[in-house]
Amino acid sequence: MPKKIGIILVGHGSREPHNKRAIKYFAKKLEAEHPYVRCAFMRMNKPSLQEVISESLNAGIEELIIQPVFLTRGTHVDQDIPKILGMPAGARVWRIEAATKKVKVVLSDPIGADDRVVEILNDRIKEALRA
Image (cartoon, rainbow, N blue to C red):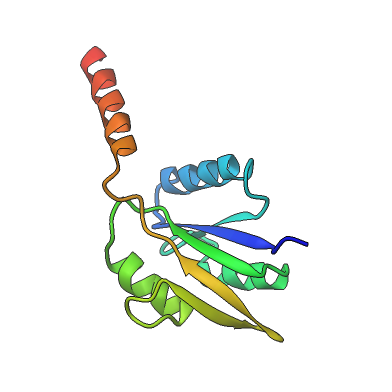
């Protein structure tokens, strides 16, 4: 039987609804390839990362991938998320306690410098030029 893997997309959160809608949109799209995808937020929106981790462990997830939906590294990716996970500084793979077992947690990289982002930026610039 394959391992039950969960993906948690972590957004910043905002008073405005746009951020939460975008993160939920990404999660819905990812569900086509990954059966367990959830959203969490660092600030201002619910659910929090801690809440979603707890929910995931209660659902029997055996491995968690924490995917920050941030353009680059920063305080949330390098300090806040690892602290929530109990990870040592610089670690990307960790195990957390879940009832009677340890669950592997992988902290993925943010989006970063990627030519696919440049394509999106070019599309937005072309749209602006047509306005």
